[in-house]
Amino acid sequence: MCNVFSAKIPKFGADNNTIAMKNVQLYDKSFKLYLTYEEILKAVDAVAQKINNDLKDEDDPIFLGVLTGSFMFFGDLMKRIEFPCEMCFIRLASYEGTSTSGSVKQMLGLTKSIRGRNVVVVEDIVDTGTTIMELDRILKDAGARSIRYSSLLIKPGNYRGSIKIDYPALSIPNDFIVGYGLDYDQLGRNLKDIYVLDVEETEKRKSINIR
Ligand code: 5GP
Ligand code: MG
Image (cartoon, rainbow, N blue to C red; front, side, top):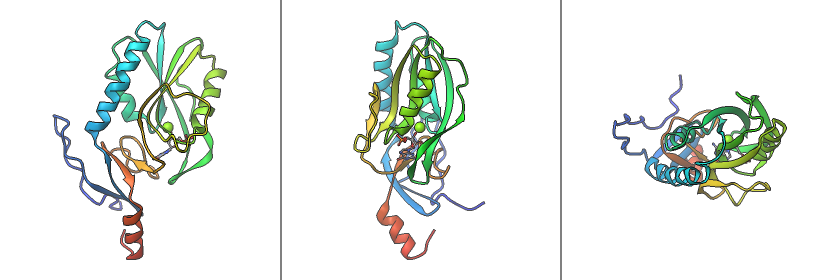
């Protein structure tokens, strides 16, 4: 197997306090540290608090994780939800490499019926909005009573959708990021911190042919 990480991932401490790597290399692209796990968890805490306040008296809420990218956010968010709730998943895909393909494929249908249910969508990142617009259609067709949207990240500069994101954890510029569930061609999902594409370093390495 080719060595795709430029640095060895540090052992994960029991205190969750592992020092973040500053840079990672995934295939032909270089990435630099953008958000540490600690910063991410602060934002997840804030979103969980809002959801706990808003939904504590809601009838039968069900959290819908949008796979694959949201699995880390989903896990950390759900640990902070203080009322009884159900969970289910759907798997959608729209990205190819570092940009959206413009069409959304449903790779795995809803793992549970949501008919008549109050759904809270848990997304990894909202970019152009194509994915959540399609998801909204799927959930309405499936008979959801109400739909609320949470997303770990949102790129307001790219967003073209008409749906309000009720619970955005963090807003970021239009750059390509990986880590904490998000991938570059399926790599990088296991990084606990978030990294942003380092265009300069990627170009530099390309010009001297280092991978
Ligand atoms: P949208 O349909 O809103 O344009 O894009 C949403 C999906 O594209 C996300 O669920 C995610 O899978 C992918 N995506 C958007 N921006 C990024 C990014 O910066 N990095 C990664 N790894 N995926 C992204
Ligand atoms: Mg997603």
